[in-house]
Figure 1 (cartoon, rainbow, N blue to C red):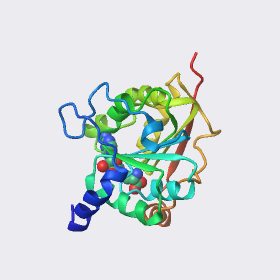
Figure 2: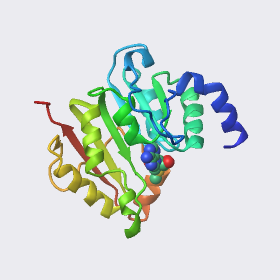
Figure 3: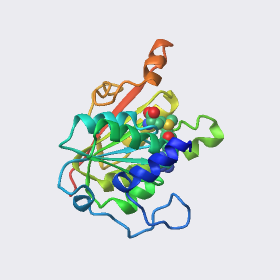
Length: 221
Ligand SMILES: C[S@@+](CC[C@H](N)C(=O)[O-])C[C@H]1O[C@@H](n2cnc3c(N)ncnc32)[C@H](O)[C@@H]1O
């Protein structure tokens, strides 16, 4: 991290970062370490979770414009989290928390079952080489963990600029009994809660297609 990012971490992490008990790896989450959202945020409110929040553009913008909702950014890239805190602080977003951890483990061990209102996965690493696609985040196992964390009727929103991954996401979610598509046709309309980043604007200019998907978590039996 840069010096400014180190400073941001030292100054702002006590306010923003949820410390996760670790298993073995430094970004793991120890089983049995679920947090209580009401005591983390100091209130009971809808909770939106973003996986792989990067520099935090989407979640800081959303948190600042929706003060009645709580937000959690999950990211393994520490410098991105430092940037996110700096921007959140500047925007006065007090309803945002961050966790530096591997997202599937956060869904499984840190968040209580049925605690998340919306789960966002925007532009996850595409792992486009054939020998690497097994590293992709959105798999059958991920769909089970997402369903565990989401409330009944909660939304899973995804976006990618990688066609092959978009097809994989759609296939995974089509096969997941806990979810139903919340769109008609091939793809969901662009999610207007996602801030338009330079990346997306540039992609549109060079004709790169961005595909959105949206799924509703079915009611538990
Ligand atoms: C391609 S970037 C996209 C960042 C951001 N969503 C955006 O649209 O600009 C993917 C991000 O996911 C993070 N990431 C990848 N695997 C992760 C995991 N298992 N848990 C948490 N974050 C992860 C990476 O560190 C990276 O910042």
